[in-house]
Image (cartoon, rainbow, N blue to C red; front, top):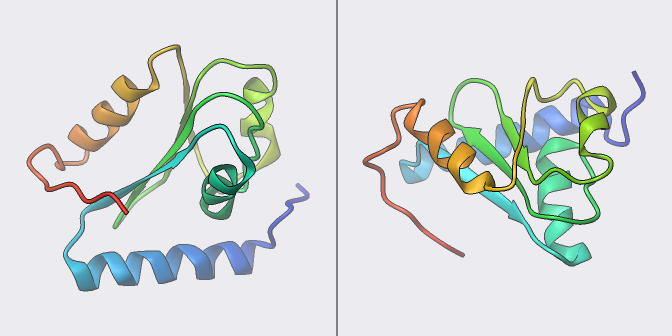
Length: 116
């Protein structure tokens, strides 16, 4: 499989994010990509998935596998075949439900929220 991000670089990125999460006492991060290239880059940075239109999210737990959540748009159905960095892909018209479910499933339902 060919990736736009080399696996070693991706692992370093995730490692740095998880170290910061550990330092700051965070159990998970939700990375949101909205319309616009800058926001899309956030999701691509952690997932290797480039979704040009529609909302997209990555749930990054401090431990365990990442989840990619997006609205059903042309191209998302191919996302699992474009990367093997993420095993869990969800697509529906209300992605917030899958994001919330992913957090609750990882024991994060009582955690605080920070938006930067």
